[in-house]
Image (cartoon, rainbow, N blue to C red; front, side, top):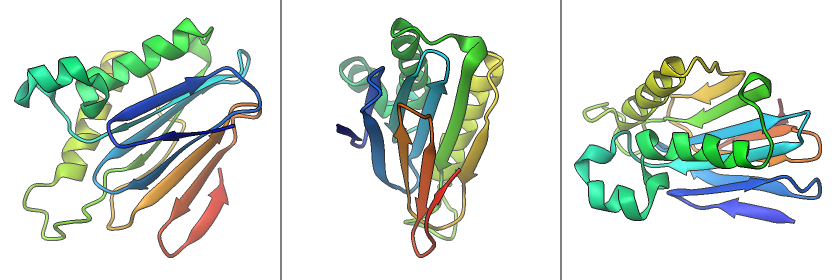
Length: 159
């Protein structure tokens, strides 16, 4: 079954017939994590770097922000049997789609927030496709952990 992760959303699974996908990652960041031994994975599509701009919104939807969504993604995947030492992390997005002059640099801010959280928790990125000016889609198969990346104008590749 395909589970679609919307904007400011997260899905996780331990069912080997599941696929998790998120579309149209522009300045947003998609974080896919997977434990191949437990065959458990999850994916987050967050919009903004810091929940301090709207704590009430963060309380009602932690997946909107990096600082609340990323820890919750890991917690929920651990609850399904994943272990930190076996987690593989893939990241996509962080582009400057709407404002190529880079005035706000939302994509870079989102990526910077992610890196601060991962570094603080001693988690490294396995592979990434961030920055630039293109939308991206990522798909993860729970059975294999295969990640597929589709970049606007470039087609889909398996990583």
